[in-house]
Length: 440
Image (cartoon, rainbow, N blue to C red; front, side):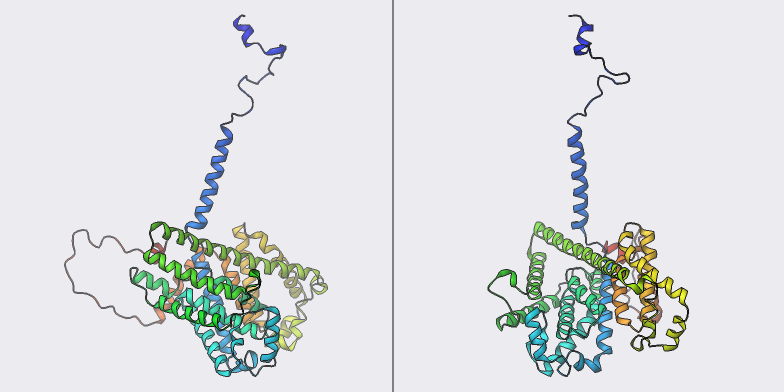
């Protein structure tokens, strides 16, 4: 057979014009290469989620916002605390006990019906809110903050509003976050004394562990022993957080390199997951509110904002409400704009510019609601929830501005300088690293 016969196509079939004999199906090596690229992408995503606690400034502003909102509410209602949550309220202790037996809500106020116990719980709620606001022992204070919020709100469930529901949920999510990495006394202490031995933290957790043991043995946590899935959620969460924190401290103190790395990955994963849940919760709130508004006839004809301005309960400034209600066209535009912003906001998270514009619009709307309708705590709670979407660059500038204001307002203390000595060659050329660089 000649060489021409060897290269001739079989059965007389000629290759099409423009197609070389080498063109054809890809080689099997292309598929492993694609799988390798996919595996590398997944590995980078996993490393990003587990390698660091994302959004330190966002989690810090959430901590500050919700603790400040709850603290201001408790201080404002301090003269009326007995009527709202205490023994003098219309919702008596027996009625609350019957309701909690049905809905299995968590509240330590049901442990005793005495006035002294109520005063102690209220004081702990105020103190934990203030310390969480300052960022002192944020892990412990976040747990006490959650206990205070749930205990007071579940004691009288019919005196709250939408803002209380938001605080109720966010107080649980904050327990899983590392919300004290910036803008806190914990971060300041870690920067000044990075190698200092922490003694206050273990003492606090030992005290809380003793309280948990006593409450469990005394039957205060209402454990169900018949079915494992009937365990109370908050009581189980308290024990899980206490044991997990104790284990994490023991690993950092006595563990090796691999256990420490595993503990760090677990903490980062819990933090990032909680931050995503907070974002999803805020989007769900706005989405459901917007779609429910669409179904209302008053929102459809553009008159929904007009009616609350004529209610005495929502008119702290009657003259201002009367002035605003006299302009029909702006009220109609505000009505339709509110619905459009709430419905569209979850779909704009992947476009940074549009998201920031709608975020400013929603924050402005809540500020107006706080002033015009007299709902400051609801507005503060929603603004704190919106803060999770604020850009990191803006929050950093906000932090620098707050630091400048603090330096101008607070008196400066002159540090005690050590004895002067002659500098060594090359000494003093490098500037010390900043707080943000050290934290990074």
